[in-house]
Image 1 (cartoon, helix red, strand yellow):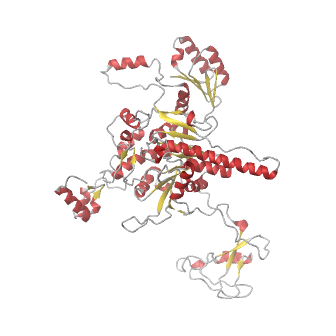
Image 2: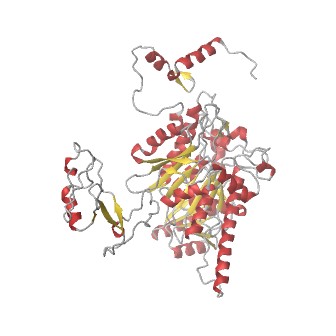
Image 3: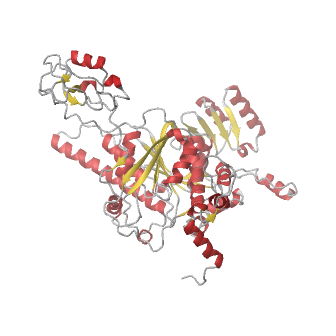
Length: 627
């Protein structure tokens, strides 16, 4: 209960809102609209077709700020770290998308995300403090409690409907992430975004701006609710959600299509051209629109005149005569019948029938809840997406060996769907999932079960789903081996059910700060500190992965370590991070790498070695850099 009465001006605003809702924008009066509504002659400022909102330009600036962050491996939380191609990243997704730009630019085939729907109860990160410095922002998104988990107070902001910038805050959160995501897509890539009525109108306009209206593919409607919702005061049960789809370049067929039904193709008359089905020949145009399609059709053998349908025929007369000559017309016995055409199975296009924009497969939100509950033996996540919905989209757009990304991973549905599909068809699709370590409510069943963050739930779901799928395959193979009585003679290759875990973290290398000219003492101290560029808590393993990312190499790169040399992808990159001597350099030269990176302080006591190394590598046409 509020302790204060409304002020007179607030009551007047409420009355005005009831009379003229069109003059309000995010709860505030747009005085230009008010004047125009009252009949005044108004020249609207910035009068052009554009999606605009409070904070848009500042959100652009935040998106364009380069990130010095990195990803550090967490082998203990991973499954099959050294062999898997799947990746799970724990961290704030805008910074993660920035970190991935060099290594995954133009490499992702499909992105699926299920972002906050902005229902009025969502808490999420949005760049609302535009005056803060980069350091302040990074500190805010890195706020942790004493146990090392992100704090809700430092990270999350509830975007209630009473907020004066309710829609703007959501757009400020989404816009930079979508721009960054677009650059990761392949030229033939697609993105799917789940959304509901709260923001679908804004999201459509935002996607038109980022991807281009010409690259809109479809606004799918998913029948998400199984039972009617009788709680709404307006008496309408909202039983659907949307999945927006945009292409990077909408210049080709993006969906494979649904399975073609061929049961109706038979050959009752033993036609040598093979099975056929009866096809309609009635047209779709009036005589005024297409007079050449309006004529009487006569059977040349019987002389029966079947007249002309109201909308004419599908083919002009010359084509129809050709069909008659080829004996492809099925003639009815009576004049009031309708002639039809033989459509042969072997003439069907290789393109499958189109994928429906209505997703109605009997897959509801409650089925996703059952999936989670069956894996965990408990209810630990609200409103997950069913794997079958994501699987439908994967089947239509992704082939074996393609990369699938989800940077609002939630409960891990996308990862589960990718592994499930690989199990079904033997594919080798890989996923990259990103999830913020959002704290679970201390009173929730998940927290009581030991899951401190949403990321913890997601990782455990992927582990359990992978183990379950692996067990199913082993059981199926054992059953077949028993039936054959000769042991399993089939290919024993197991799909990839593992995943590497990485965490977003500060750089392993000290970052140069631009102090003001008067702060000489800080400049001097920084120069001294940079004699050793490695940060205090850095490890060799973490440095290796940071240098991979910042040199555009995949997190799944092959890393060979011997004699203090890290050989990446068989000579694409060599890292020297432990020690250097002439013997080491001689070994590096035998590898014929494209590029060598070494810590500068490894040469600190031997300038001659550094000079000789630079000359030797230059003569061998090998790029050499020191940190």
